[in-house]
Length: 198
Image 1 (cartoon, rainbow, N blue to C red):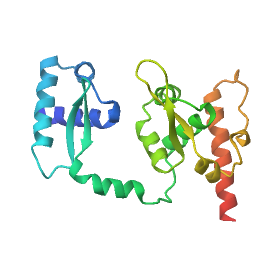
Image 2 (cartoon, rainbow, N blue to C red):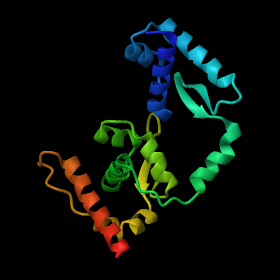
Image 3 (tube, helix red, strand yellow):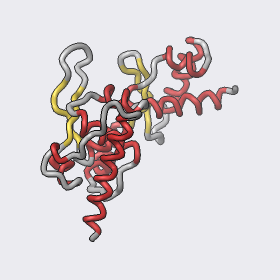
C-alpha cells in the first residue's frame, strides 16, 4: 500500500479509537507495519494536522497513545454545539449504551464496552451532553475510572418515577440476557414516545 493509503487507514483508526487513542504497538499490529514506520507515519500526520492552520483537528500524544482532537481555537463553536438543545433521536449505539448504564449503574465506560463489545466513548459523550447520563465519582484503585449513572432527565424522558420502574430483566439463564435487557428498554422507550405523540 502507498503512503496516502496508509494515512487514510491511520486517520480511520485514530477516529475509531476516539478518546482512548492508539499506541504505536496497536498501530504496528493492526496496520502490519514496523514500529519505525508507525512513528514516521504519526510524525508526518502530525505535521499535516498541526502545521496547517486550516485544519480543524490536531494529533496529540498523551500517556503513550496518539489521538485526534479538535483545536482549542474552535472551542467556542464546539461548546455551542453541545449546549444547543437537540430534539434529535438517539442512535442505536447510544440507546444500547444508555440501557446498559440504566440497568448496571454505577458503571465504568470499560464495563459498558465489555457488554457492547465495542468502545463507547462517543455514545457516552452524547448521553452526557444530552443530560441523560452523568459521572458520579470514580472507582477506587488504578486508573480511577469514572462511574456513570442516569439522571433525573433520563427518568423524565422515559416516563419513569424511579429506576425501580425500569422493566424487569429477563432470567439471567436466558440465551442472551444483555439483548433481552436492551429489548425491554427499547420497548419502554417506544411506548414513551407513542404516548408523547398522542
